Amino acid sequence: MTIAREITEKNYTSRTVNEDVVLPERSKELRISLSRLDWPEGEVATVDVLYPDGTVAATFGMSGGTGKRSNTVIIIRNINGLPPGTYRMRFNVKQALRTAILFEGNETFSEITVRER
Amino acid sequence: MAVAFVKQSAEAYGLEVSSFAPSLASVVAGNCCVVTISYVPSGTSDVAVPTPTTGWSVATAPTTGDGNAYDAHAAIFYKQNAGSGTQTATFSLPAGSYIGGQISEYSGVSTTAALDVAAFNDATGSTGGSVTTATSTVADAVVVANVCVIAENPSTPPTTSYTAIGQDPGDNITYSSAYKILSATGTQSATWTWSGAGYTFHYIAVAAVFKADSGGGVDDADATPAAGTSTVSTVVGSSTAATTASAAAGVSTTSTVVGSSTAVTTASAAAGTSTTSTVVGASVKIADVSPAAGSSTVSTLTGSSTAATTTDNINGTCIVAAIGSSTATSDCSAAAGASSTSASGSSLATADPVAANGTSTVSTVVGDTLTGSNVTPAAGTSTVSTVVGSSVAASTANASAGSASVASVGSSLATTAATPAAGLSTVSTVVGSDASAPPPTGSTTFRPQFRPRRR
Image (cartoon, rainbow over all chains, first blue to last red; front, side, top):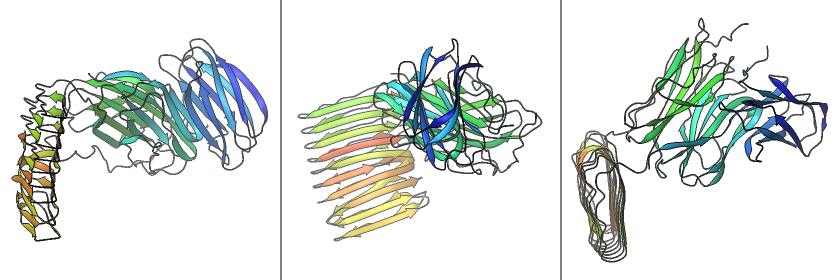
């Protein structure tokens, strides 16, 4: 697992923020982790993950309140490898929140755990 | 055009999310998109699997589980005849859910009736699991399978020539999705293995077969309207003949013969519109629809019914409906107004509904009926519809004026004439030699407790 970019903990207001990351070569997986720092109840944000060509790979919604984990994890991956280039995380913040964001590239698939241990 | 895999989206997975929307760009219009999801709800188990936004249909989405939190769920949805451009399936989830999946695109799949059979298996296994569908009906097809399990490292792809479209290497929630292009009918199975011996794991495995809409036909027959438009299209399978659609005036169409039908015969309209469409399976016969004026329709014969009988309509409304293997569904006569007869059981005959005026309908004969027959209104509308079972013949719908319909489903020997003297005549949809889709396989009564792996 290679850290491609790390955004330290900070506050986000209600707006759309684009965060770009260059995926390391030969990556099969892009993993984005957002720390959940006392997020407010209800829907707080959506995240669109865009390929280097600008098309959307997937969109995820996130809600606040108590979760099972201390972070939300978003994974985009392909067995045959992801297209190289600059990926964009379009962060549509709907309620003010505080988070740190970690972008990681991986040449193999990382494990998904339901519960942190 | 044979069914073929076109492309897939990246796998997407969200942990601690409240909505999920995988996208696939540059989809070709008319293709079929399939989305497979693996889902772990945030709350307790046995919840309904979320359904995507409008435009997607459920292939299989079982609401099952082992009663515990962090339980595995799996489902398959599809969009037949998808529009061009980007296709997105949006799922709304309880906050804090875990979900993953992808969209795959296939060409050559039917644009009107893509789903052939589907199944799920809610079970447990210490080293592996599987799912098996009922017998598929069309050789040219694709099966898509998906498993979600609280275990480690499902094999990818499933056994017997599947190609992986998604896989998680696993820790304690894993999934594996794959497809296989088919060239023969039959039951379709997918089998996975996984590690973690010593524990019994709950899993949901799902599979769905999507069938072609063309190819492999023996004979596309004549479409010869004296005036207007006539079309014969899409004969698939081992049909020996799809014959004539003739319209003296108006529009005549014969379309979509699939399976081992021995004959699909004539749809003739002296005036108006005549249509014959969609014969699937071991059809033997669907008979005459001959209104002197108005609309006539023959549609949907499935099973091995020998006949569905007579509906005579002078005026008013008359309905005969038989379901099952009844020995007789008898007369329904209305001098005026509405009349209906219905039965369930082992029907030998669906007899005469007679209405002096108005509308006459024979509908829904399911089982071993022997006759499926005449609809002959002197005026008004007459309909015979939906014979399911072992029908040998669904015979005549005659309307001297007004409209007449015969609709049936099953293993009939022939689809014969739709011959309105004027008006609209339609023959459509003969499906399969089975009376109904088999139930999903593999339900178990054993509900073990989920025991997470310890490190």
